[in-house]
Amino acid sequence: MIKKIPIRLRLTMVVIILLASCCVGLTLILNKSAFRMVDIIEATKLTPAKTTDPAAKVNDPLPHIMIPNIASQAIKTNYKAKSIIYMVFIVILGGVFTYYLLGKVLFPLKSLSLQMKKVNIDNLSEDIALPEVRDEIYDLTHSFNEMTHKLNDAFTMQRRFSQNAAHELRTPLTVLKTKVDVFKKRKDHSIEEYDELINVISSNTDRLSNLVKSLLTHSNMENLNLNESIFLRGILIEAVEELSSIAKRKNLTINIVGAEKVISGNKDLLYRAFYNLIENSIKYNVNNGGVDIIISENNGKAVVQISDTGIGIPDDVKENIFEPLFRVDKSRSRDMGGSGLGLSIVKSIINKHKGEILVLNNKPKGTIFKVIL
Ligand code: ADP
Image 1 (cartoon, rainbow, N blue to C red):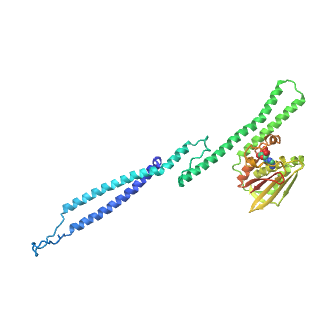
Image 2 (cartoon, rainbow, N blue to C red):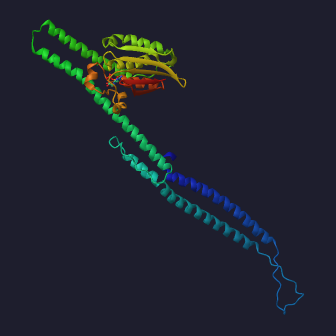
Image 3 (cartoon, rainbow, N blue to C red):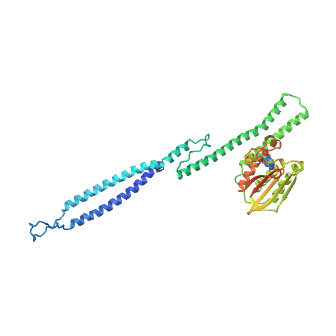
């Protein structure tokens, strides 16, 4: 019930309780000391001042005056009633004043809340104006703006991902459908035509299945053991060996330099990450080019650097290459069988291991991927 009361009213109630406690205490103390004073005065015989009248007899004894008991009782009752009335009046006045002041103090918070309510998925990129005073509300508004920017980036990426994923799935499906439709138009087909159809179906279903597999890996990295002992040089050699047939086609030289290094992580995931990076350094390389893989250590961290002599990555898209389904040259990458998910999977794996991945230019040409774990 108390949780439903607005903060302004709650704070006013707290102030009223504090004010009332202080006022009651003060009134009790004042009443007590005033009553004691009345009692003392009541008990004291008052002697009137000596007269200056020469006619008055010098030897006349001065009369003593006593305050009657009934009068002192009336004074006490009167004092008590008035002090209670003033106390109640002060508490009510204090409460009203506090409520008014809190309204002024909490106004920026209320207007911030109204502006926040207007924020929706279509205007996430618009900032809420920062207040002039650099107080807690300024910090809150600033943090809220930062949060909406992050949300906006995430939504934009999500939207681009869905569009790209739909496009990637649609392309092989369209090829399949067109091929089958054309095939159905005629009844009699030669063996070569059957073979061609089967090849198209096979390559496109492979592509679809690889794409779906990559999408699943991308979204399925939870609950994996990240504490396995991994021999870095060992898994790099394994990946290079598996990719040696495509490296041979381009006549590439692949070197692995550096001593063995043992780190902890998930073997399958890290193998997948390095496999993707080495595969790219081969796919986007030139004939007779080279790939250098260097294992080293920096500040207690393992560093793996994969440099190639390939086509390189333009500086303005270096930020984007880790986005799912982003490709610098769409048709070229697709022809090479790329799904555009490789580097985003690499990035997710490295992030999962709390590592870092950097992309740099190789000299005189090519790309360097640096993984720090
Ligand atoms: P893909 O499956 O298309 O290779 P990736 O996510 O692995 O997708 O890479 C994204 C894009 O980054 C690629 O399409 C390619 O344009 C670019 N890229 C990745 N690695 C390299 C590299 N070593 N050299 C040049 N370009 C690269």
